[in-house]
Amino acid sequence: MICVKINKTTKEIASIWISGHSGYAQAGFDIVCSAVSSVVTTSINAILSFKKTIEVTDDGKILKIFILNHDKITNTLIQNMINHLKEIEKQYKKNIKVEGE
Image: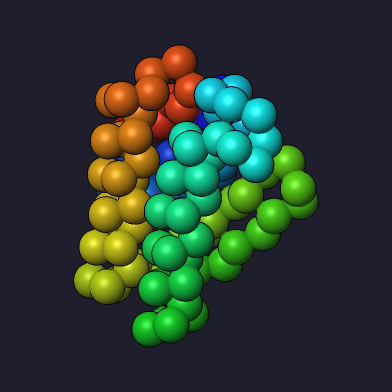
């Protein structure tokens, strides 16, 4: 299962951690993993193309997105990413879990 953990301060999202494999199909043929990868990669690239308001680390097991500076563009794109991940979760509850929001 893909686990998306949204970590918040009292007001704002501080970081998002994404780990696991959906188990929907064999690696390389998994539409759930593909959808999640596409949404996350597009969101990260969009934010970084406008501003350097996030830091991304990937150790091969956990992709971590740290929000360094909250502005309208960053917050909108992060929320859009979360909304997309939640839509995937609605259709594939056995394969992805979004926690923390």
